[in-house]
Structures are given as structure tokens and as C-alpha cells.
Amino acid sequence: MALSDAEWTLVLKAWGPVESDLAGHGQVVLLRLFKDHPETLQLFPKFKSLQQAELAGSADIKAHGNIVISKLGDLLKQKGGHATLLRPLGESHAKKHKIPLANFKLICDVIVTVMKEKYSDFGPDSQAAMSKALDLIFAGMGPLYQEFGFAG
Image (cartoon, rainbow, N blue to C red):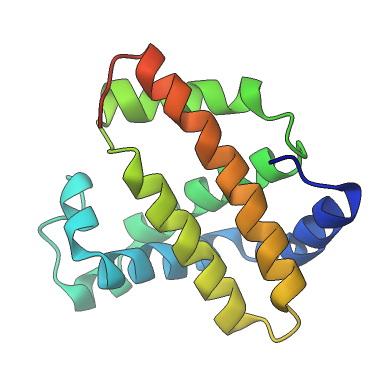
């Protein structure tokens, strides 16, 4: 499942505009996740009691979105050598937050969808490369979840 140098170039080029507004992009991604997969909202104790309109205006959503997108950018920049960075993320989400593994795939799909809608130059080749990169990161989470004893 490794990506070629050309695919990593596409991924990082596509990620560039995202980095210009990490919090804004993160907010859009989380709001879209909650809209398309409302069950995921229940996994966020801080947000689960908020109505859709409150979510959109929440500074906490924007702050959390910033964390999500920043961490993902850090992982992508490793070009597949992300195991060291992924480990604490897997541990915290398995042990502390108890986030089901499938939710990582959901947010990966939402990220690609949002990027496709937001950027006209995020074409099929870039979309395929980004999906492959996110799948690579997602694939690394499964063994960590097993190691940390969370079957979610």
C-alpha cells in the first residue's frame, strides 16, 4: 500500500492550501462528519449536547478541528514513516477516548470529500493519492488498537 514519490508529491501539494487555515478546515471537516454521520457526535462529550446551529458557532469545534487537521498534516508529512507519531494518537483514542476504529475511516472519507468540494484543482489523481495516504495511516491504527486492547 506504499505510495510512490509522485503520489506523495500530489498529497503534499493538495495539503498545502489546507495548512493555510487549519482551524477553519478542521471545523468544516468536523461539522461535515457530524452532519453526515450524526452518531459520531456522541463520541465527543463536550459537543454531544449542542444543536447543529450551536456546533457551527462553537469555538471548541474550531479548536478541536485545528488539532485534528494539524496532527493529520504532521502524519502526512512523514510520507509513510509515521509510526512514531501515530502511536500516541492510537493510544489516546483507544485507551482514553474509546473512539471506535471505524470512525477514523469515516473522517478520512469526509476529509477527501471536503477537499474535493473546496478545491477545484484537487482532481482525481490527487484524490486517489490522498485517499491512499489516509488509508495507509488508517491501516496503522488497527494494530495499535489491538495492542492497546480496544476492540472498537
